[in-house]
Length: 314
Image (cartoon, rainbow, N blue to C red; front, side):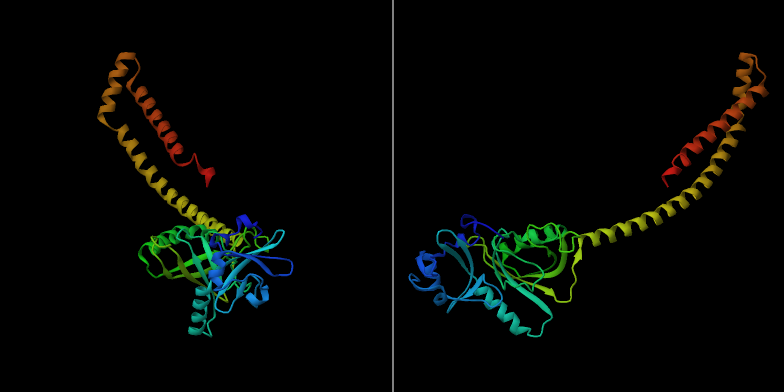
């Protein structure tokens, strides 16, 4: 990630040196002298450290492993942070499982989840963690609540945690994977190895492992699979609903027709028709026939409104 010296994530350690065009140290902070164990003024870079074989951002001194970041101003300013403990932990894990099929990377986090150290910084790993970035930026959105909750417990209780998380394999600040299909994710184990309480500095050291044979799934593939699943589920579900509704409608029609017929035969209806026919001068049989016809029409309207008016939605 391109950035200036003012925004360098390693600058917070206050350990940096200034180098001239001859790669000779012309200035060093007190923190840098303490980190090296001596005053590096007038010494050349090749006498201070040796670059790691896989990357230029990690160097090895006589006693320490440092993560470095160089900035070209009038002179070259190199910021440093100590990752010796991460290197040692990585070496121990490698010795414990020399023939492991897992890719391992050790990361130091602040109590707020910001990456402060990474080892090793190798292109071999599927996820490109960068110092200064929040760890949440690399974690699938569905796993963030689990990560934040467990990180909070870890910093408070100094407890060992092991989580299964999905990590973003795209380059930082890149919205698409190399195949153009959007973000891709790979599953990994997030293991909290140690932590310090917030009253000290709240640092968290974690080991992340990835299976070498694991395959990243693009967001487009996940979305397509999910869409297909729900389309099939919806189609099957609508078939079940339609079948159920058909059976329900048949039973409901049967009961409603019986209810309507029973209503027609009620003696109260006959008495009502007789009273009305006397009042308006219409025969009782004519009035009863009109009532039966009206009741049948009302039943048909109500039944079709309830069961057939939304068939176009299926």
